[in-house]
Image 1 (cartoon, rainbow, N blue to C red):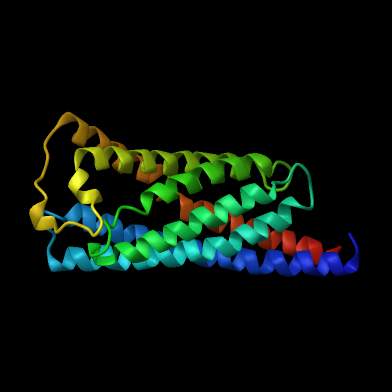
Image 2: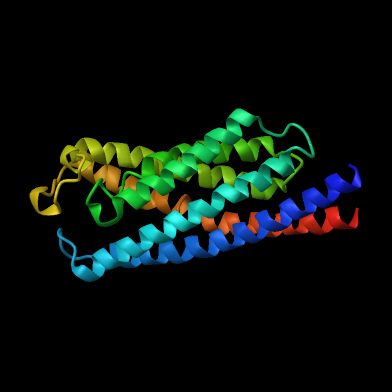
Length: 231
């Protein structure tokens, strides 16, 4: 690699690494707010405190994925340094999925325009992208980190599947503009129980571990930056 390319790669790794760590920290905080809201909610119609936690969580997720878009650029630069890398189509698919996560989250704040769960579907597509990217980054990231990324991706895919299943249980909650929670009757059925349990456990694998994987990836990118600077 020529000197200009080395400097460009080092700068890309530095920006992507720091952005990844920031995204991870925000993601951890957002997940903490989500768990607080879910575990302390005691009524079907959430109290003002619970709504505030959900809305703050949504803002955090929007920031988390907005920063992840910049991380995707760093991963693309990293993939170009050692085959097999990943294609432009795969890169654009990931950026598109993350952009839609941000858009759906922002539109769902307060559940006024759309349900605040709509973002889980593009998040599931992002999970597929995460699996493919980690598979294609063979030789660029440690094997353990790549396998961790694929496991996280699978968790996010299952979260997306759970959201679709819940949509069949509560079709009124998928309405646009969003239906008022007061008009939606709680459903007690095996399907409802299954998809909510799937969502709960899949979130531990995907949503909770995504920011951890992001921070670890950011540290690896900063390490690559130091190596590129030395070369």
